[in-house]
Amino acid sequence: MSGLLGNPKILAILIIAGLVFLISLAGGALGNAFGLGFLSSPLAAIQIPAEPFLPGELFPGFTVMNTMVTAWLSILVLAIISYTATRNISEVPRGMQNLIEVFIEFFLNLAASIAGPERAKRFFPLIMTVFLYVMISNWMGILPGYGTIGWIEPAEELIHHAEEAAAHDGSEGAHPDLEGIELQVFEGDAGFGYLAFGSLKDQITAEEYEHDGGVGEGKSAGLLIPFLRSANTDINTTLAIALVAMFMVHFWGFSALGFMGHMGKFINFKEGPIGFFVGILEAISEVARIISFTFRLFGNIFAGEVLLVAMGFLLPLIGIIPFLGLELFVGVIQGFIFAMLILVFAVMATTKHGGEEHH
Amino acid sequence: MIEGDISSIGAGLAIGLGALGPGLGIGILAAKAMESLGRNPEAAGPIQQNMILAIAFAEAIAIYALVVAVIIKFV
Image 1 (cartoon, each protein chain N blue to C red):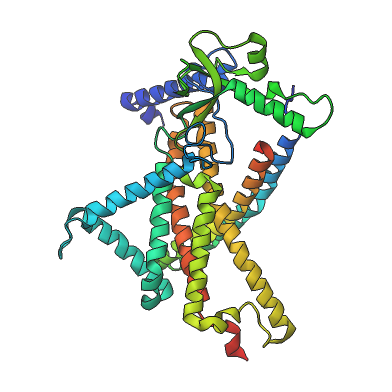
Image 2: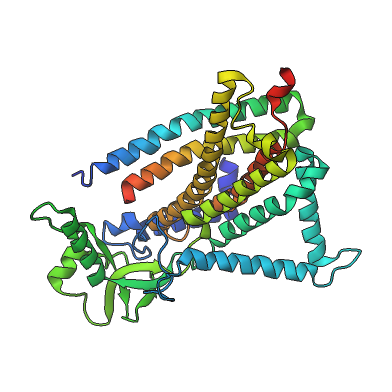
């Protein structure tokens, strides 16, 4: 240990790392309590439903959500990648085509080892699409700019919503909880902005805003609604993927076993009352699979975003670095698991009922 | 000194108790995987794959608890 500390290089690195940590701690939320907090920005408003991409409706009766925009962006990225890979397709693959072929072949072999070569070719397009889409959109979700740049929902509107909600509750003398609404303060009043370094100090509650009648010249208060938000933090995206996947699983089940063969797994009169109830349990578990697909992906990615936001709040600049690595890992693992589970369920759906052989 | 809603306690309990079972499950899973790796080091590939898949199942339950906690806290 003394040998390590004696080395001036290592000692310098340790001292610099310690200094960076201390500066980050002082600049973060903890330092803000002591009047520092020059690096931190207010905790981004965490809400479960996706927010509108722009204020108001882009098309009449239809709001474009920020998660939809990022879903389109990840589709665009995938399209560009596959275009560059297949533009000059050749017998002996080179460059991008080679890379993608290695990737695809690895997963085709993996699928073949689980489902057998025949069925693997059938299931492969769907599971690879799901894998690539989930992975790319998860990875894009941790790019800088996601969740930090957006338009500002003005303070008046937030207070108005709180008053409406309080009036809706109906209890007499209901007061909107203005103290509980924390407003972020932005430079300029352009209507869009970002969470700047050190803006944590300026944070005020809605009550103070009402009391002071504004935040002064050239500043505006409100909540940041990001333009971009990771596509899988919207439960609608994950539900859509789960529904498509389970629809295809049952489609393959019907086409492999015939209508009666596949339905017989769920509505089963042949094996007496126990078989009948087992069939009903199977049917319930099919529904549970959709729910579990949906919430597994949504929960993982949403929790990851909240984790990054919280770490960026507590330890600005350096706090999120280890968690970015974790999010990269979680992003690919969740895509892999989604795809593998579809494959396993598809194999189960296209295999004959196990019980019949024993009777 | 302590501020805030009583629902925060509920959210904390939901994720705290909900993470207990999956944590134990993942520990058991990893222990068994290591054990079988020690017995049969050549099978590292499939063991690791299946372990990650099974861990994802256990983890999903913690994620459900997390979703409940987030809903209690923010909705």
